[in-house]
Image (cartoon, rainbow, N blue to C red):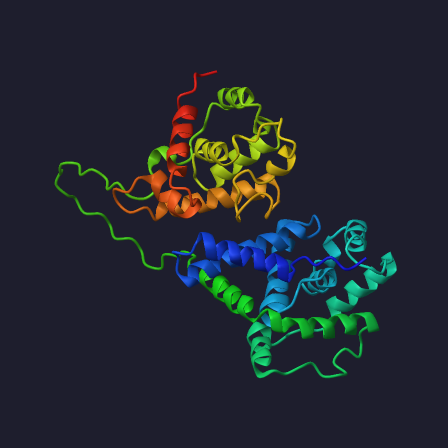
Amino acid sequence: MERIALLSPQDVSVIRRYVQTKYAPLADGRQAEIVADAIRRTIERRLPDWPDALRRAVTDKLIHRCVVAEQREVLPEDVLDACGETGGADSVDAGTLLRWLNERTSNPWSAERLSAHLRSRATEPAMGANGPEGAATAVAAGSVPAADSGAGESGEWRSRRLIAWGRRLAWPLLAVSLAVGLTVAVSRQPARETEPRAVPQPTAVATPVPKPDAGMPEALRYADIDATAVKRYLRTRDSMLADEPYFGAIVKSARKHDVNPLLLFAIVGQEQGFVPKSNKQAKQIANNPFNVFHSWETYNTDILDASDIAAKLLAKLGRSRPEGRDPFAWFNRTYAEDPAWAVGVRKLFDKLSSLPAS
């Protein structure tokens, strides 16, 4: 069988088209940030079942090397390289990694071959030691790797490098977009306070001033819900989301991003009618009932990933809401093309908010 890429040109095309269409009003830098986040999630989701810290470290290395610097698809063997170079080889289960690898490569790997390769990557200098900037410069200059640059690698390994190098010319716009996205994402991190706060001075009592009606409304921020009542209502709709892992994943993402869980359930109701079990494709739809990245057919992930993406987007949109703008209409501008979407979501949110207590 062919090697199964963790990130292929087709994956990237789907993500970029979706972002450019759905987020057309946003600046190019903001679109690049969304593309970068989606690509990171795609790679992380396809890695072996490793600790979060190792998955993040390996994903960083794969993005900077394969996508930004060498501008090519991400292959299973690249994961081995990155794992060895990040020092993660000693902390992973060899059996799990071997099974994962053999499911994705054409030539079977033995435990001995895997162990030897990880050791070699841990002791060799990391490829692309000059970093993404140096590699990107080489691409711009049209340079190619020297014929003997893979002298210490197997024929299969050298072949993979040379084939990938030839393919990378199809990736330049992605590399630029992703590099911008990563830069913007880092620049958005809040700076630490470096100056001591001033000691507050006594002030005269003033008449309270109403808070401006901007940002995420308090009613749409996270609050504990009557889970029993919500599940009871979902079951009247024959919804798969009343069961686990779906219900718990949606509530978990809502809490993580400070979004009212009922807002997420209302959106699922508007997008997919709460995913009735009678639908022949209910299990597939339930993986992405929010239709993030265009639709559940285009981006069929898992419920935790999909709800996390949706909650994160809603939180960001909520924070940017101008004073006086209706929050549901504000979400509608970015989330859906149908102008009636906001009306449907509001009705479902009000319905869920007024359910009889359990």
